[in-house]
Image (cartoon, rainbow, N blue to C red; front, side, top):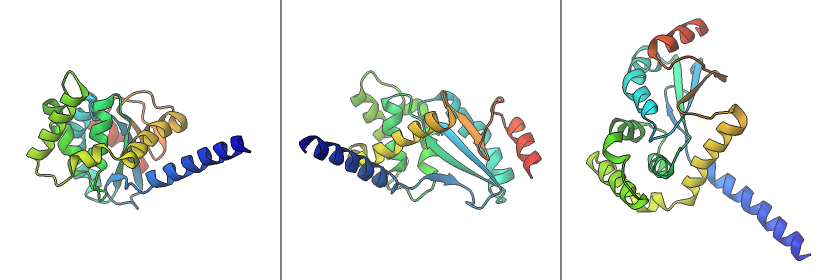
Length: 193
């Protein structure tokens, strides 16, 4: 009987945790009804992901997102504790907009370094404060629901899509296998129109 109770409590705990994690809004750019949907699995400490945000995203936004043709959903795939904590902050008090996410990539060199978790968190919080974002950083870092959401994104990426590196893009559910440049993405997007 005792063993059954423990198993039942464990199952209920998993259900509760996953349902709470579902309350965190996804970060999406663009119209949810867009014909073309990109899902990108990325790590906030990944330099190639920062390159995407700085050099590819602006053209995608101008050519396709702003015209309602394309939406991008950002999925967390943290490669280390710094990326995990940055992802929690990017989702904290999030209304679905990507402003803080883009800010963190634009300023990655200012915060994604340090010899300890404490130093990394200090650099992360200091950088966010320069952007005048109104978040309770310590509350967000300690938030188990945010952590579950971020880790569930990573687990989904591995199990459902066999993601093993960042950034990885899915375009309308199909893994994009070429170099992630605006030119390459534009060719695929235009074929889907």
